[in-house]
Image (spheres, rainbow, N blue to C red):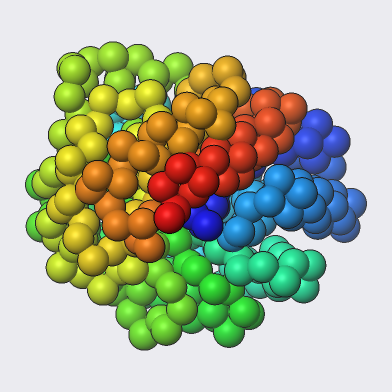
Length: 340
């Protein structure tokens, strides 16, 4: 069968946090919030298993945001005095913390949700971390004065947590690098090197997720400016093909990415995005199977994994559940067509 997995995030239930928001506010605090995070994580583990997915994630239920969920556990960052900063090449403004001193982990970051996930499924589990280049683009630097130096500092901390996650029993560690599709030259120049530093010493499967962003208005508007062909991947894929990273996750469904660019990832497992995270319409198994069929022109069967384009966090819970089922059903149909 074609393996199936999600890119990372899933919607937070209404009793945990604000719904259909990228930066939701929690509904409780203290021990009650911790229990709510655990309950939401278990809910989504069950939902992924019920849908028939092969690789299970925690849905990032314990994190307010995929970047800040990590950096809030880092010393040297001022969260009290956030500033508004343009991120993703000023695509949109975000309220971000400031790096004000040397970076150091306060302790374990994601032990709670990783160990919880491992304890409640017998399937392979994937855990996501923000990539160093994307972190650099989502915090304000008031200390290092050099993007590369700061990225490498974050990469060392990510590596520390990644090695601990591996010891927790995580099978796949994925680094999310949407910034690779924005700063393409820098991504090829030093972004992949920082990514490899973050993955140094890992013996579990390693992955990188590169997309065109969540299905929020700012990202959807940006996509409209990219023309009929989105060739951003063309610059970074050759560098990734030479890297030690095992898997690459990319956006495919309802995008203008030329599928032949997947040929640049020869030798890697390719997580082909077959679920659109910017459209609440549920994909049919036939649509998904058709997309997988086209991807098979450029990716060998044993290297293709069916995935979501990006995280589903800003979508409704009902839509996300249906899209998980569509993902599994579409991959099954694709195997019936192409598996022989």
